[in-house]
Length: 332
Ligand code: 2RA
Image 1: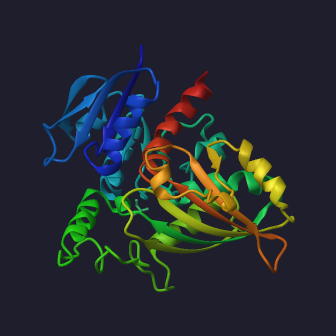
Image 2: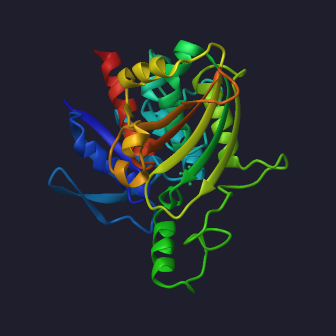
C-alpha cells in the first residue's frame, strides 16, 4: 500500500510547486488529494498523467486518513485545519509561519536537523525560505567552527509573495505606469527593504523569522542574528550576503572542503572565472549554492559568503517533500 498524501493550498505558488515536486521525487504515492478554497475547488491538476480534481478544504476532509498532509495556505488556514488533521492521526507539514516557533513542534531542514523527527508524529513546521538556504549553507560550518554571530542581507525574488507579485512585476516591466498593489512602491527597477510587517524594534517579521528560526533549528539561543531582508525585481531565487563570526578561526581551504561534501550544497566559487551563483542559474533546482567565500579583512574569525537557492523549491516545496522522505527513512 503506497502513501496517501494531501496538499492544502494546492493551487498557490508553493502548493502547486509541492505537487510538481511530489511527481518528480520517487515517493510511493498511491493516492494524492488536493484541497483549496471555494475559489479554486473543482479545478483540476495533472499528477502522474491523471487529472486530479481540487476539493474544497473542509474540517471533515482533514479527519480522513492521510500519511502526510502538506499545507501551504497561509497561517490562518493552518491554525484552523492543521490541528484537526493532526488530532485525526495525520502528519502535517506546514509551510506557513503559524507553528514554527511553537514549543514542541519541530522546525526542520532535513540536511541540518532531521534528528528532531525521530519518534515524532503531529504538526511539523517548514522554515521560512530565507532561513532554509542560510542554514543549509551554515550548518556544516557551524559543526566545525561554532557560530557566534550572523549578519545577513537578503535579495528576495517576488515569487516569495505569490503569483500576484509575479504578475505585477511582469506588468510593470511592460508598462512603467502599471500601479503597485503588492508592495509599498514599484518593484520594477527598484529594491524594497520591507518584507512583511515592521515591529517597534525596527525589524520586519521576515527579519525576525531569520533570527528566531535559526536559533530554533540549531537549538542555540546564543547564536546572534542580524538580518536585513530586501525585495528585488527578480522572479525566482533568493540571494543572501552572509557574514559569520565563529568561535574557531576558519581557513578558506577547510571551509571549501566542508562545503564540497555538505548535503544539499553546491560550491560555485571561482571569482577569477566569474564563477559564483546567481538566481537565473539556480532557478528550478533543489540545491543551495555557495560562492564569494572570503575571510573578513579585519577579524580572522569572520567569513563572508554568498548563498543562492530557488525560494519556491528548496526554500519551500522541496524542503517539505524532503521532510516526508526523512520521515519515511526513519521508518526503515
Ligand atoms: C517571501 N519569505 O519571500 C517570504 C514568504 N515566502 O515573501
